Every structure is written in C-alpha cells, then in structure tokens.
Amino acid sequence: MLAHAVKCGLFSRFAMSPMKPLQTGMRALNWAVVDQLLVSACNFAIGVLLARSLGPDVFGVFVVLHLLMLYANSFQGALILQPFLSVTPQLADDRRAEYIETLFALQLMLSLTLGLLALGLLWLGTSFGASWSWNPGSISAVSWTAALVAFQIQDWVRRYYFVVHRPRAALANDLISYVMQVTIIATAAGFELLDVPIAFLAVAFGSMLAAGVGILTERIRPGTDHIASVVREGWRRGRDVLVAWQLQWVSAQGIVVFCTSVMGTSAAGGVRATTNLVGVVNVLFQAMDNVVPVTAARNYAARGLEGLLSYVWFMTKAGTVVLLPVLVALALAAEPIMRTVYGEPFETFAGLVYWAVALTFVQFHLRTAFFFFRTIMATEAIMRCAAATASTSIILAALTVHRFGPDGVMFALLGGAVVGLAYSLRAAHVITARLRLDAKT
Picture 1 (spheres, rainbow, N blue to C red):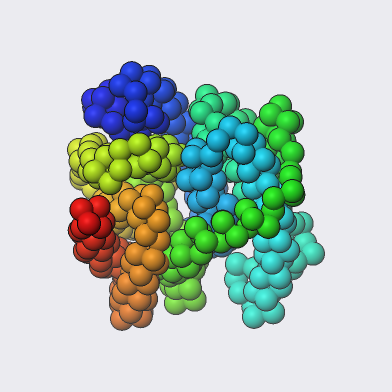
Picture 2 (cartoon, rainbow, N blue to C red; picture 1 turned 60 degrees about the horizontal axis):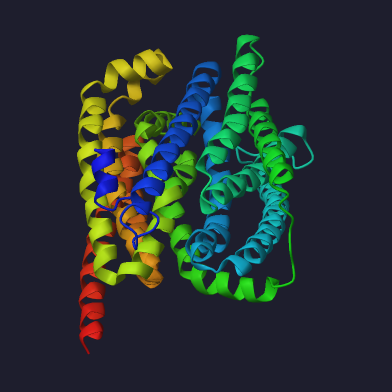
C-alpha cells in the first residue's frame, strides 16, 4: 500500500522528476512513519502508566493540564509551524537559512511568552479554586510550565529536520525525548512515586535534552535581521489558521476541560484513556502532518491545481483503506482492551470507544481537506469550518453533558466534526470550481 501510494505521488517531494519523487518520497514516508510509530508508542505507554498509577481522578487532573498545554501549541502551530512547513520548501537556498534562523528566534520568544502566560493561568485557576490548578510558585507549576516551553522547542527542532529533508535525524531526536520520558515515568511508577508533577518533569526533561542536542549539533542560532518581514508573512499565512485552531480546541479538548466542572476529573480521565486507546492511528495522522504540507506545496507549485487534487484524493482513499480495519477491530474489542490495558476502574468507559472510532474516521477526512485549503491559501475556509464545528459541539454539549456525561461529550465532539466535514467538502467544491474557471479565463 505504501509503495503504491508513493508511485502515485503520495508524499513525493518533487513532482517534476519521475525518479526523484519516488526515491525521496519513499525515504521521507518510511522514516516519518517509523518516527510516528515511536512517538505514538511512547505516548500510549505514558498514558497507560499514568492511568494505572494515578487512577481516574488524578489522571483526569493530568489530562486537563495536558490539554491546556496542547492549547498553547495552537499558537505555535499557526504562527510558526504553518509558514515553516509551507514557505520554507519553496524558498531559494540563499534565503532558506536566514528564514529558518528568524523562525527559530520567533519560536523561542513565543514559547517563553506562553510560559509566562501559563503561570498566569495557574494563578487564575488557584484564585477560582479549580481542582486542576497549582500555586504558580510551586514545583508543580514550574514543572508544567517547563514542560510547555520545552515541548514546543523540541517540536520545532523535529519539524526542522523534516523541512531540511533529514527524517532520520528527526527520529533520532524523538528517540532521545520520548525514551527519556518513558524511562523517568516508568521508574517513578515502579517505586510508587509517580504523580502529576513528576509526569510533567519527565516531559520537560526529555524535551529539553532532545532540543538541546538538536540545536547544538545542527548549530541552529536565532536570527533577527528579517524578523519584521517574517512576522508579517507568518501573520498573513497563519491568522486564519490561528483562529481556526482556537475554535477547534474549544470544540474538542476545550469541551472536555470545561465539562469537568459537571462530570468531575474522573470522567475527563476516562475520555482521555479512550482517545489514547484509539490514538494508535495517530501514527498516520502525525506522519501526514510532517510530510504532507511540504509535499503538497511542491506538487501545487510544479503541477498546479489538478496535480494537488490528484495527490489529496489518492491520499484520502489510501488513508481510508488503512484506517477502516484498524478502527473496526478496536470497536469490536473495546471492553477487553480497556480492561486489559487500563485496569478494571476504566472498564466502565469502554462504550466511549465506539464514539472515538467514529470521531477519528471523520477527523481524518477533515485533516485532508485542511491540507488542501492550506496549500492553496484558502485559510478562511478552515476558519469557517472550525466555527461551524465549534458552535455545533458547544450546543450539543450544553444539551447532552448534564444528562449523559462522558457519552454526551463524545456525541458533541462527533456531531461537531460531522458538521465541519460537510462544510469543508462543500467549500472545497466551490473553491475548486472557481479556480478552474479562473484558469480558463
């Protein structure tokens, strides 16, 4: 399947040569998949260790704080990684190095700023008596903030390797980060010392170590000579995506966070355990995120709209064929898998697996539509789609969570995703027709 996908253009970096895309695309795809197998396996192991050691209630606290940490990543993804992956591959060699150095400087500034804001959020949470918050001056708060900052910088370093066509180095960097995290968490669990602060210290230490190794070995330095122009370009390309990601977060993770006041942290832990179980398919999703934006940009530049559509359409069909049997198998074995992996306290959440399977399938097709919109700079469609998704999810959550608890949350997430997919398909049809008409005239 993978070899056939590459032959048909999937994940190929260069569309103008018949042999080069086959060779470079196969290498990029293979290493990206191996990298994501590593990341997903380690994240799954971390989730299992935490759930078994902490129990649903305390694990729910970790889940809420981790979701807030991922929310901070929406700013990085839209303002830094979006132009990093889409613009850098199209630049001439003499401009590429300066552009990367400037983006690195912006990444450092953004991460540090978000870290300070995170401490402020903890202070607000403490003031309002939130069960997931800590005193901003405590070691717990420091560990969470350090994890937030270090995770973002390491994520930038690993994307750097994909942009410069060195996926094996990305794998090595992730190996340092995630193996270290798993080792620390497993050791703490073995001595019955594992708690939420230690979990975030593990994330912070592993990410810092990997980021430091990458920065030093690659001699990446921050540059500020062209910072004003890069900020303007990044804002132009990323503003719609930034708004869209805020809405997406609200319509997905945000609903889980906000509904903890109704359901309690144990329900949040159950929802996270379920999505973590289905997260095996994140291997495909994350490999797409690392490779597809770069490949799509090159295909669009070389072959125009029809080449891009052919690429996205084949990727959609191939991904569907790969996903379906995996998701069906997870749904059929939901209860024994939940009991075996997480233990009896989590067995009551097995029914959520059915919702998670359907949600994952819809999200895959949403993701491919977004790749199309991002490549042709139709980011307003992403923003409108996210608005439709968020409003639907919020309305459904308000109507169902009080009565149905975690099932209401999953129903709201799935309903919002279905509405978003319907809108994105309609928008893609309209935009494609307009671009074809413009090409004829």
